Length: 348
Image (cartoon, rainbow, N blue to C red; front, top):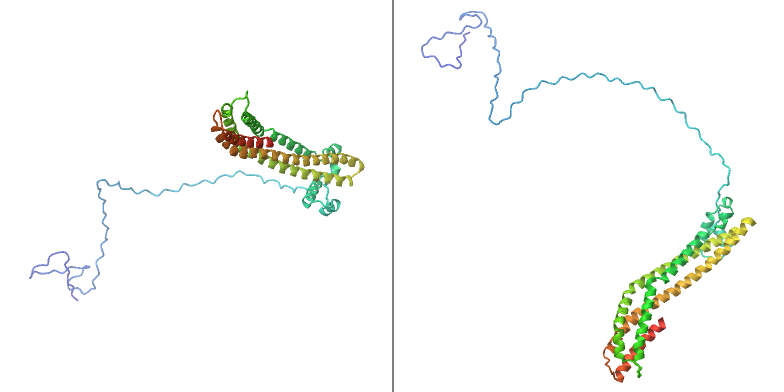
């Protein structure tokens, strides 16, 4: 078997040159032994060096891996186990000396039979009053104070009503109307004529400025009068509520008189009399408030219908009067003046 040599990377020999076969494994060209392949040469990788470029960041040098720091075991201090807690024993309430507070339990049906014809709402109020009473825990001073709180509320409402009627608004309006009535009456008297009386024009000229001022004051007082009316209406409702509370306390006292002993019953009779008197005062208070509201409403009518409606026509008639008015002028002016003067006089 003949072996041809392969030439790699070199130019081919010229024609006619003698080729010498390569000796492989010590074999000659005509040897009979089997050829052995030459040992392969070790291939080393080519190391590429990085090229430094202008403006580029410096190359990061390889960092050796950090070696873990050995941790020492933490010494935990020994804690003794907490002692076992024994379960709490059930403590029973000890009986203290005193009087047991047991409120009254009165049914609605019982009160309906005891007080027939009473409104259901009022029966419920009386039932609530009785539910808040513990007869065993009440002494003589406590029974004497039964229902006093409701009576004190009524006294406060009476003071509020008096304050409303004496307010500067109502008193001021009444005074302004009275003064206006006086000034217009002077002008009306001057129209009757007479030897010693001044002329109507001069009298009207002397009172005209004050009449205008009174008109402005009465006109601006209207909102305040409306506020007084609203306060009186609210006060009337409060009186009605206090009256219902007083009635409920009186019903409870009357029921307890038949239930408790004679000594307590005598105290309750005294309180029942006082509560009945307060109930009568409530009725009087409501009636007085009704009259007060009517009074304020009359003042409103005087301001609206008398001053703001009729007074402009008086200005119109008196402005045309001369020093010596004719009978027709005098009659028309006197008619307007008489109308407003009598209107104010009836309301005042």
